[in-house]
Length: 193
Image 1: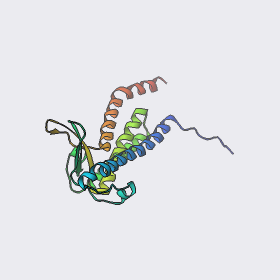
Image 2: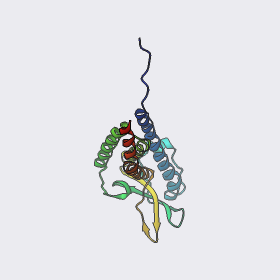
Image 3: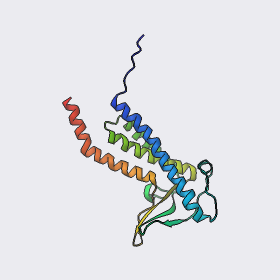
Image 4: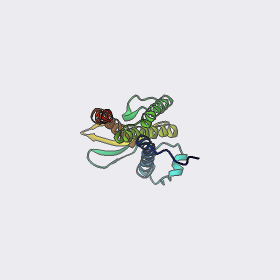
């Protein structure tokens, strides 16, 4: 009887840690939404209301109305319900097509993550997948995505966004950087070996 176990390859370790990171990004996104909506927005929207606990929040689909808190002269926490994709693009009142698209992209990126050749690639893919799933959770929970990070200058507002949108954007930027600068180096090392 052979008791020797097959070692985990570096590629599989990258994938396993990447899938673990997806969970971390989802948790960060959902906790930030819960905290901002319940502890910052709810008291402004419904004066005197007590914030919901995390489990109560997940079991309630009540949407908080318009509320805003200025943090600096160029940054506010402003409650916006986004029916479109990231940064308010393609507004749509039916979330099912966007949920399906996000799940499809997450599946494609998960297959890519399983074959990730570099650590930066694995983390970037995890960020995109975690962000997409975080926004899917919002669509299933509220029928729209909770956005609240609002940057503005002289009356011009960048579309409000959330942590999931940030993860998606940063993840895509890292993937582009990786494909242009790091992947060619990894391929050169492979061909030499």
